[in-house]
Amino acid sequence: MCLSTARGVCELPLDDTSPARARQFLRRATCVEHAGHVLEDAVLLVSEVVTNETRSIRRAETGSDHPIVVNVFGPRLDVLGRKADEVSRAITEIDGVRSLDVERSVEQPQIEVTVRLARAQRHGLKPGDVRREAATLMAGLEVGSLFEEQKVFSVAVWSEPDARRSVSDLESLLINTPAGDRVRLGEVADVRLTPSPAVIQREAVSRRVRIGVNVEGRDPDAVAGDIRSSLEGISFPFEYHAEVRGESADARDSRNLMIAAGVVAAIAIFLLLQAAFGSWALAGLLFLTLPFALVGGVLAAYLADDVVTLASLVGFLAILGIAARNSVVLIRHFRHLEHEEKVPFGPDLVVRGARERVVPVLLTAVATLLAFTPLLATGAIAGQEIAHPIAVIFLGGIVTATALTLFLIPALYLRFGSRPAPEEAL
Image (cartoon, rainbow, N blue to C red; front, side, top):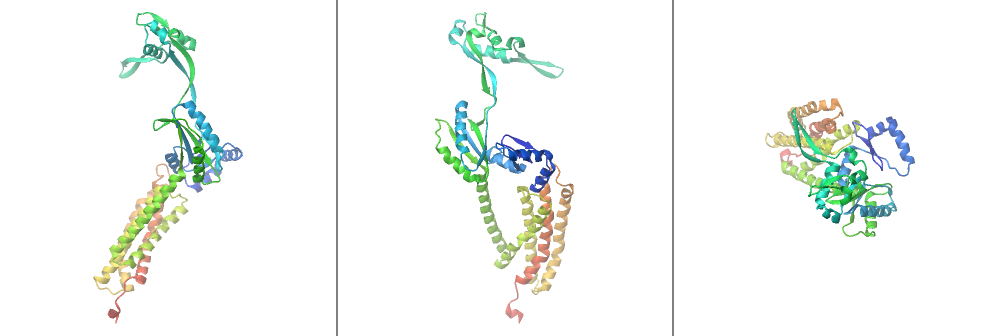
């Protein structure tokens, strides 16, 4: 779990990342309680409690911990800074924007050497000669390696520390000329101390400045739309532009894609059931009762206070598959007894069919319980963040899946299954 602010993220150790456990943890953590009071009273800070999965997904979609990100691209850092400030002022006026986090580049002092071509030529020096000599004296040059006691040591040539303590000392450094003489560096080049960015952020080869937007009181999609509209009123020089990215739009597209895939999968399952039974009624019967197998998994996740994640969906799918397989086999066994062994349709057929299938169904359930019990017993420890929720859902779901197969399916088949023809009954 992490506590996010407009200036950074304070990470707190928490094995269980469910919302309820997170709230309990926050109530017990004194430092977080004090931080919450401070964040509530501060105007320029925004707090948010998110799980590691949400934070990872947000970073994958926007590249930041913010729900909306505006990236300003361009070649020159000074122009980027000015355009980023202009974009920030325009975004601040949008309804729903609580605060901004502008990515500022940290500057550090750097020695800059500019060669005086005319003076360098009088000494027979080329600009490259001056820069190489200056780099060797100021930063060192690796000239070889020393091997001793099975170890490798790099050997570098560098000037003495007392000779490079200030800019004036650097100007007094002597460099060699092609004629064999020496000349002061300050006579053939301008040496000055200039600010330089410590890190230059790039994306797709272009330099960029990132503006993180914290939203409150409005839909992030609506805020992102207003930001795009405001950017249309800002003029950017050639080779400069801004892009808006938000997790909500990507999440909506992913959700719509999952819904569409789910509908297609449901139709395919129904058609497969119809092909297996040769009966639309039986296919519809099983299709409508299969979700009952998931009730135990949902109840187990609720009682265990686990959040349903993408990994947990694997457990639900596995339970659904086991329940579907056992139910299909049971119904086909009923039909086999009725049509092949000529057992009359009625309670005796259903009881006999369920009794003959009870051992395989229970063996599947017991084997599953034995396989996942160690994961459940050890709890949500480090290294089981994915396996433990699956085990909880699987152990709860296998109970309802077994009850569905042994009790509900036989009862429904007896009520809605095939019946003998009227002339046969007479």
